[in-house]
Image 1 (cartoon, rainbow, N blue to C red):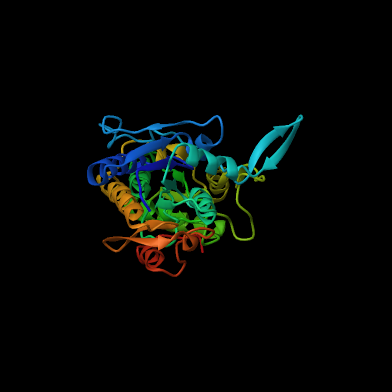
Image 2: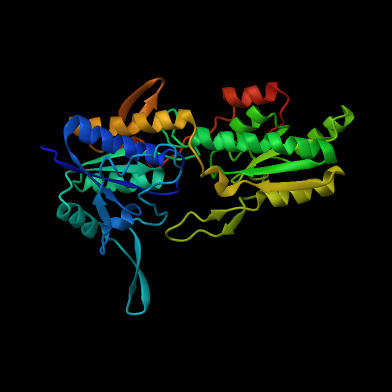
Length: 362
């Protein structure tokens, strides 16, 4: 297969390091192979007429390495597999994959690099099954994609959460309060447990381990008896009390997993009533997605972008580039989608937290 022009898009939530991937793809494609690169705007939405795509040159990617976000834009609900279309005043769900494939053909794109998390990579996998040459790049601050040791964006998100814990410590100690920090993590508590350990949290609550409020209150009381009249509680947005469900601000629908939120405020109010301490909640939210990527994320994202171009050159389509130990390799997309990588409840990280005296609410 002769490659002359490749396309690239970013889908799902933004993450620090996306621009580093874009830069690496463009520079590697041009310098090493002499290919043209077409940037598709706003995720897969850019492939549905009216299309939005343009060539990316070396000038276009100059200076973007330290920038957060994505110069291509992104979309959370931009799947061509299932799209809402207004038909005679009635909303219908339509498969617009044929239109997306036709756009790729019209643009003369010989291969497509898809940068995103599970949803984006699943769309890429479906396009690959229909004959589109696709290479995936793993992106999610939640670090919950299987078949790779780490996704870019995670390190920066953990640093942001850790810095927040550090700052909450001083207020908690000064006012003798319980400070609850809600971080992202729908079904996987990687950010919560990494930041919690790094920041010296007293309680870490993750989706993988349903918690008991009573156990959290006991930990706060234990600290009181030891003369430490404040506590730091880190809770993932997808955590849930034993016997209860997750908290949703916006419910699920046909095209969305729903918007989680509220666990932090609920927990703070509950602990205030049960522990005898004032309690306050801080929700980091999208602060975890933004800002300058760490050096680690810049390097990892750059390695992923360069490796994705090499995968195209080798014809390794319907694969995702992945980090295994210190090595970048390719794994079949079918092994990377439809499931998530969670924190093992009996794994080394959880054992480390327990050994430090951190309560997991059990």
